[in-house]
Length: 450
Image 1 (cartoon, rainbow, N blue to C red):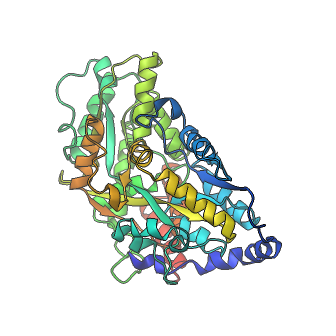
Image 2: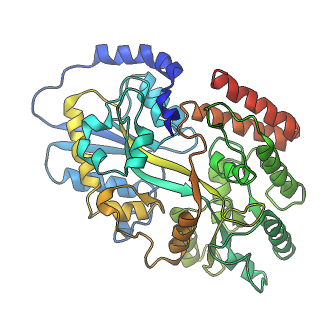
């Protein structure tokens, strides 16, 4: 958990010139008067309970909260901006390097240490100390870097150990009998393959039994669920890159076998993560390798509107394992990082954060992402009560061991990009699984300076 203490010296050098330019050009804020701050976020929040009309689309609810906050007439204006998953990391980097980052960025643990290394950020323990104290201590620990500061405020966390089956789609084409072992129940890789083979026989040829993608770095943790089920770990106990790569080789071979049997989508190498999710949300695949509250909401909405012509019947299941036990899931908190040194902006950012985390909004906002609350004040609050699909998700999370999959490594973004490239070589036939995995770990070792 303390790999985060090795805070990306390369990134610090990369951003040094931009940071100096930013500091030199920054004018001292005038006392009093209004202040405008910017808040960048990714498409995570949709379908917020109690605020359905204000959260029909990604970005809408954050904009609604900004309007509510501004209506308090406190002299603070918040401008929210929705950042796409693909290219979002580059968007942040360009803004930081240009000396014009957002005041607050909401991003996950694999990337916020890189932003912090730019020298433009103010530690969360200095901006919102009471909110840091209110956060689950184990999560705060992995956000505490070698300088002793909590580099960003953990907001909520996903635990990505779930898949989802479109049972309604199967029933449309005549499926009868049970599906796998039932909601939330573990199953083996052999059982998954048999299920996909049966599904392929009844659905039209334009519907994929399942969808996988490595066209971009998004969704690397989904592959990691397969690799770790076979025993793979990215680092050993000493922090060195794994020497045992057999689990990754087995995992790639499994998906490669599914692909060759026509049990997954064509174009695995070129398909991007969000595109894979879109295929499932469009009723064109049976088993998706991830599930989110927003995806569930999107399918339900399309069915209600008549865009999809099957009944709403989804089933959430854990990732399979060789022996049919519960496996691992990726732990990846999303946090607020404060990318300014201006005290007036920091005060405004603190007020905005306190506002959105209040009981009126925050639990329902987090529930609208299908993620986990991290605040101690909400420790006894069960977000899943009354929602069958999310109750099953909660069951899986309770039975699935969490692993950070190397998210706390400061080179995580570079490693996930390298892993996407390895997958592309495998699924275009440019390299064998064994050669691609060996080359990948040579890259990992170089990044880790081994």
